[in-house]
Image (cartoon, helix red, strand yellow):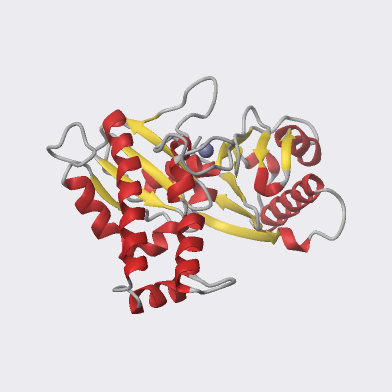
Length: 306
Ligand SMILES: [Zn+2]
């Protein structure tokens, strides 16, 4: 048995994952419920509480847990959460702190992985990429991340996590990006950029869910500005994805993250644009493109797969 933890900006989800990659027990805590202490202390307390409850409930002991995997935003490394802007954490040795809290004697194996890469591992093991040995997972949400597999191997550079698809520059001196550079793929194609530009054109202020916004877009699909924005978004997305294809030559690309809620508006045009080879070097036989399948628990399951 392993424990997988999905640590996000809004919640902490903790799951007991069996050998068939299924979650047999789960606990969720919300960041908004933190009353006192630092965010780091709150995370450690929630994880310890969740794991202890799960163990009590399943008559397991800590020594029965082979490994704890944590999926976190930012660039985690060597058991540390790093540069997790959404959590307000710069550098936190979560593996060490969690070991102090949970283990009396033996050290528990605790691994920390970037959340996009964790979702990629789940997608490869149990989701849409299961049948493909050379493939790419692209997570499009607040930012754009992902991972690549060649010959079924999860590609992991030594120095840094790599596969920063979102910070591939697609336009020199282009729009500014959260990373400090300009013209990055995610400065054009993150869900946030798409949604805020669309809301501006359609004059829809404030929070609105994807389903509602899709309905409004569909009602205005012949509006010149809406059409242009959709075309421009799809073109930039096709450009970025084609660059990835040119480098990795995957057989398939799976797209996850909150942008996949807009699949019905984007995918058809995206596939057409990629398939017609505008930005591809090898124009024959482009890869298959589809949306991710592993679902909301992909972060928990993927965290146990490293
Ligand atoms: Zn950037």
